[in-house]
Image 1 (cartoon, rainbow, N blue to C red):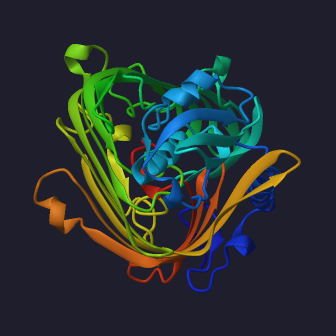
Image 2: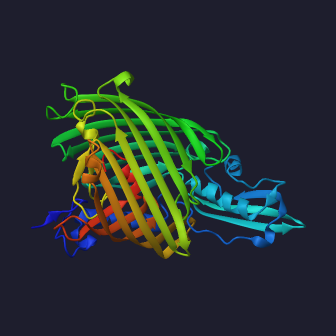
Image 3: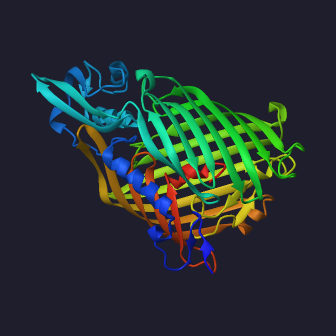
Length: 459
């Protein structure tokens, strides 16, 4: 009897081919993403590390020239460089310049050309900027609701200030509207913020009701040192149910504000396709209670990621994520805010909802081999990139209420897959996993890093 896989497709659990089990419209949208990537018409990031220039190291920088800018102010790009006029051009500044420009998410290609000028150097920074308005096919994949598709638009540099404005709408089992305002993480700018809004209309298949939810989140603070930032967060979740007994409020609509603090470290060598470095995000929030609204619980989230280059083309990635919540589910904590383990974005090789609880712990170890290193191309002035990785992975996770369930509910899965490194979603994941007894080999189709989805309420 066919099993409905974790991305929402009917599969036989044994011998699976992703494109055979995908609905025709899902194939169309996936191919559309690839087509847009190859047309350079959707947001991309610089992927190809350029050759270093050891013969220029140690020389004083006489002048810095920026070539190729159309939609972003030049002074913002100059402030993003570690290289300064009058300073020394070194291997460290060359790598830092590339890293910090990549973080901006504005360019499909970045190239540095240091030219000798006597005993000094003239540094030319040539960039290929994205379009001013970038339409793209928008896709979301969750283990619970499968694939939803639609369209979005992105302004990579709003008002020429390196602030990205993104808006998208998706349709399918999960109907969704999203908008986000995200300034780039800048080298010489201390203050930062991130504003997001999300609307969802979906069948909550875990608790059997139709969910209408509005979610607003604001994060902001100051950056200190080079790769650290601290701040506060405010979020507001308004969720209504078409069935009684699904919300804490007897009126079938919960309104839950949250106030909290966070600290974040990002030491990855590249944001778009990291090979080495740490990323850590720690958050603690009061939900409801003295913050007002429905519910009353404290949540703490620990997100730790490590990328380690083993050799040329070989990368080891480790992700560990935990959420601890006080309170009693169904009394202080809404049931829809508890956690369910299994499937595409948590433990591959298991069906969704294999385990559940008020707390969660997820870990992944993944080996990646770059069969095709990301290559940057230009066609008629537009830039794009594409890369292919082969992967082997192991997942371990648990969800629990009483502490005794921590080990009792622990499940693990392992498998292999393919990664397509492209614009918009950064990564398309096609995985085959095993672990659940009697389930055989399960297929999983996902987008972005799995660690990104682990942070989401709907995953």
